[in-house]
Length: 476
Ligand code: SAJ
Image 1 (cartoon, rainbow, N blue to C red):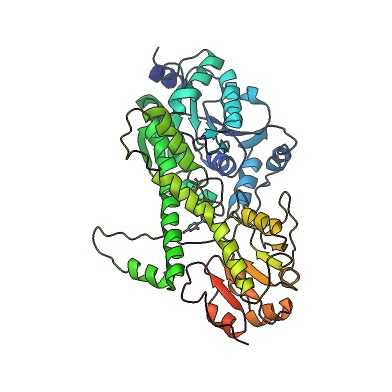
Image 2: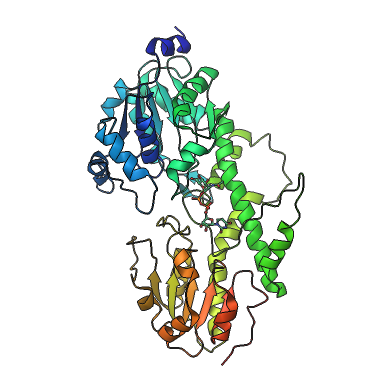
């Protein structure tokens, strides 16, 4: 009996399970449940102290995801109300399903030694393995090191189940490509990279994803190529941001405006000429760009170490890009220190209003926020820091001040770290009044404010990439 026979015997996919009720798993489960082709979807969530609360919320049709997620709450209410979706901690229910997907975080434990923390993912894979039945499909959606699907994931599923991948069950990698704030849209509209360990697995996974795609298409390839595609697309984005950051640092040093240079570079259009330059800023955060480079690096170390031909002794361009982006919060510290020094205020004892704790503009997502290393350095230097973020209610280890006026009151420096729309309309006269300082400092880490009205109001202005303004005469 071949896998194709087993799958034919099972018939079309009807019952689905999604492991990992987070930013990726919840919208994916809701969309599967909303598809008329499928009869029922289980969302699997461990009943742990930290995230067990999600089970009851989801079964009430409520989204535990904070922040604006257009359409998600309504869709959850609809599929729960229709009895097509339920959340459970009972993994034994996997035995009755046709397909299971895993969307579990894959952070790095040690970036220097390229050691990821796959503990949660492997626990999930073993839970699936325990209840795996012939003809079932298993799909890894988490971003993983190239070689994981064909390697450790396959081995664990076979060990736990006693079945053989590609013979008794189908296995594929279909990496998520979602961004907070537009989860449902991204799943429907982005093309779905799909890498089965064999053509039968790829075909079965295509059957799973096609019903939820609207404008998106399935792009089939091998499992390892799919893993490399996902890790590389984030690595390349990180590299593009690092290139913009390095150029911005150069422009500051040369006393010119990065944004003039960017407009100039961007103007070279025409066939074959793409100049998709990204934006410099106060840092790169989130769960993706901060680690996927290391998954790619680990992949080539594990799968291609002996074959790789690379200039001897030269660092990986991708890792260097990571280091440049990780440097930006330190550059923000330098701009803050220099700004204060212009008015004779040492960093020690200075009052800093830090605007923006989320890693992404107009979101509440604080994972690996670049604001944190900056805040830590300020505290280490003896400064007093007041934090504000219109989207983040609370976050571990910090106290947020809900009122922006109270955050700014008495501040020596106001530092914009996240590109939230609310900060775009800050009024320099109002901010100066609240700070009560003759020459408050403003540091713009996201090119949100026009420097001139602030300089005219007596501020010391500092901005990423603004070499044309960062040494302006201070107006009385
Ligand atoms: N950032 C810049 N300059 C830019 C763009 C972003 O400094 O020009 C900073 C942001 O402020 C943020 C960080 O980089 O701190 C990441 O921003 P992001 O826009 O890349 O957001 P992510 O990490 O949520 O989304 C990325 C996206 N990947 C790509 O576009 C290749 C998204 O499509 C992925 O789904 C997501 O990673 C993921 O889950 O992998």
